[in-house]
Image (cartoon, rainbow, N blue to C red; front, side, top):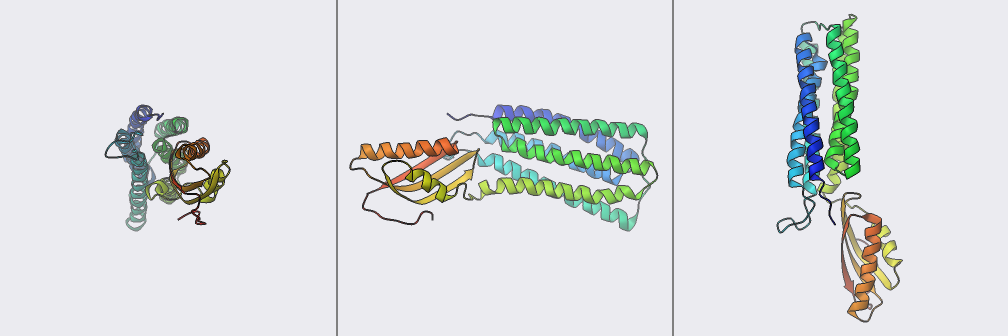
Length: 295
């Protein structure tokens, strides 16, 4: 049975979208009133937060786990593509932050002015970011949604960014104007690292990278009584989300019914180990020999 998690994903994304818009408004208001480059960069990052929520809603809408006529292997890659889009947004944010910081160093700018009430508003922003990150990650892990986990990592980077920016603005409040520009650079690096992590986790599914070592599949298949040989093994997908396994099997059977029973046991053991898994087995005659475990 296939579990359709899209309803739960949409609910979380809508809640986090509203919270991210609230955070964006606070950052923008305080950033404009103080003239803080690091805070305006943070507001830009929050634009990508909201955009990634919208992208996640679109991706979730199209990512039904059930196959259909046009998508016989299901729609799981739509969510991976959504996570890839989040990585792209993070890359754009990184570039914009660095560009703004370099321009401020070369051309200069007005001094940053910050007040105690504005710092308290930023603490509210920090609290909202912490709630969103842990809420998304908790639900994402519970229902196995890569788009929520990826977006939670995105928001988690916001927590450290906000802490750094608040620390810098406290320094500005105490008279250290240069802290605002200096902190813009680690903000950009943290944004880049967050995007790279999301990309690294989801790219294997998009490029059909090997999901399971063929030697592991071979060992499981050969442990089933009646299996003589297992070769030409291939797998793709991501463990815990959805994997596809193909193999050629030689069985010790003189009739189709016995061969079917043996292959069913191989499928059962593989599904038990790597669920959810979709397995295709091609049975060959006992006289056939092959030592080619994988392609």
